[in-house]
Image 1 (cartoon, rainbow, N blue to C red):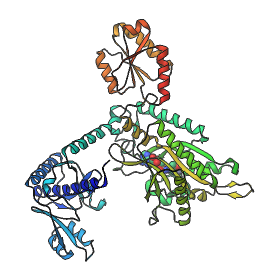
Image 2: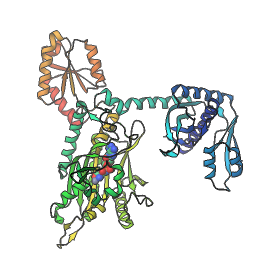
Image 3: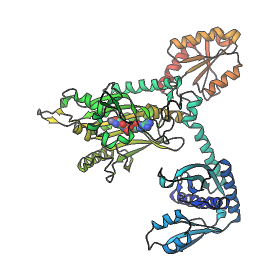
Image 4: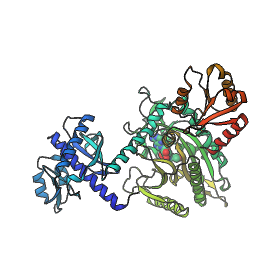
Length: 583
Ligand code: TSB
Ligand code: ZN
């Protein structure tokens, strides 16, 4: 962990490095114009107008070289203060700077920083000389719309990072390299877990047999857990009439995220983005007494969302997903207990998957955003306060985020960081007073009066798609035994002598319900063993003369070079134990 002061220093260093990069760009592309160049968590970037030029890797290297040259020259970085008028004069031929300056107040002192032949508008602070900028690296580039608006011109965005010491830079680059190796899109391809095809479309991955095995295990796992906790599972269709979403409010507040209407026989149908409306109708199908509540309706439910094609990412952000969804219909006096049970379930599941790097986020509405959030302040305040109280009482550390609530209510989201640095929601638990109102849901209380239940929406694994993306990155594709597509790989030492015994063991393991493979190719033992490791198979059996003569099994665990020999009975016990450990 770095402290605040170090963090500030690093920000200054990176900010100064952004200027250094801009200066180098200006040397190489004299017509370049600069928009903004902020410091970000991972270093800095600068948005640059290079006219018709699109950068490539070689250009990046040239810029980096020029930066080194400027740094060696060692010019001082000098602050200048200007009035708005003077600043407008200085940058008269730069529309981007004029845009920035015009947005400043008339009496504001505007600062510029000059280093050698380059001056940039900037609040600062900066390091004293460019000499201090030694250990930097330009990492990547991309196109970025001016002001983030797709109607505007595309600027060239260059990312970089700068450190105080060579060692820090080297470590950082190594971490980036490792993160790239963990990227679920890369591993998903290598391990044949899923694929994409342009004929299907962006954000619509196909799960291959290996991925499908993992998914089936996850589905069974969570269904079993939920059943034990009193959930009832249902199946509902992916299509519904638009009417349903007009009643629920999705049509008013969520339409942008939905695929367009399909017209059929004068009917209007839509693909559902969420399952809540269907589950509301299931609740409404019966009269409920206060004694029946809570009712927990779960579904492993396919949903469709119109995610921007630039935002889709492997299995992490898709357009067709399957939620591990449930809606809990509770009495107001049951909110706390039910909510706590959901949090306990999240923690229980996370323990099974060894998920320990996450943050709880309390996602609240943005009062200003009347398009997204239904306009009932009283209801919102009640829901948000209720959730905040529950979290405080449960002693759960959380941070708050405005504008991240669902349109129908506040959420407790569990945020994780992906290998490539995306901050995404895995699990969610949401409190909703709106949909029960919209669907006129009731239960009969002790006195025979009709009362309104409250709905808790929750997804523990989130979606199987996103959870799988997470798992791939977390395990680096080396799934624990209970999840691995192939759990055991059988390799005979010598095909001529040990094939029969290997086949016996293979069949015996299969009969015992393990997912087994046998490698009977005419290849060297060392080659086959290496391949077993590349496929990240948890257990590799090596069966030779000794094993055959003594009816024993020798195995190696993934990630070790040790060979252990057990009797068949002992080996089965070992497997059973390992399956229970979930790792
Ligand atoms: C929990 N109605 C609730 C439900 O009852 C709901 O839909 N909540 S949600 O919008 O937050 O989605 C649930 C989970 O789906 C999220 O927590 C997230 O983990 C996952 N998710 C959301 N969008 C995507 C996507 N585009 N691709 C993959 N997973 C997604
Ligand atoms: Zn829901």
